Length: 144
Image (cartoon, rainbow, N blue to C red; front, side):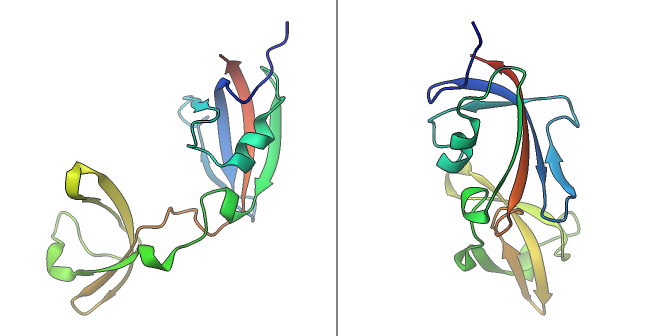
């Protein structure tokens, strides 16, 4: 009997993400470590899940999701201004650097430095792929 992805399936899959210019943003194939996707656990968008339904073990699919269904739109509330004195030689305030900040409760949140102006550092806590349409290539390794 052929295994088909259903709304309650657990999937092991290789995922490759491409930007609108065709360049690869990320792929689980780089380290040969496929991702585990649990359908219905809200870790992926309903639009992403809908693309997986009905796929079979060994199957592949390529699809594009708009930003809202991929990593979300950029949220201006996720831009924060941090005092430059909070940075050090080990964690310099340099545009493009990704710094992990520890939040109350020990939650770590990565942010990208967007701008350094005097004693103010602009840190963007949006997902690096937020605001972009993403093309996904899914290769189903196994269905549980």
